[in-house]
Length: 143
Image (cartoon, rainbow, N blue to C red; front, side, top):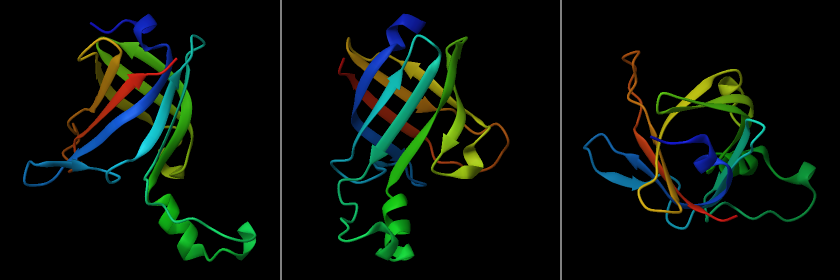
């Protein structure tokens, strides 16, 4: 059973895997993605993951074409809010997100510690019947 104290801290991304329709697993944001997730004693959390191959920009932000900005956002994950841990389920209560539709939602994660110093967060199978890819995100304690 995962304990709250085991979650509290700063974690660095090891891997972000997604399951394809054929059952195989692949790097959801490509090889070398980097990121971090933090959990605070206050019950707050934040996560930021970015693909290694996101485009680099030059010049003023206002001069960057919208399609280039959109391509950058398609290769990242970013949200923050509160969290609760109940009966082996970790709920991320999203307050602000790079996808506005997620704001106000709870994202369910199934946490485990495969080895000391590592945190594995898995998504839960869709209960509403809508197809959704399964994901596994592995973190290494970095604090």
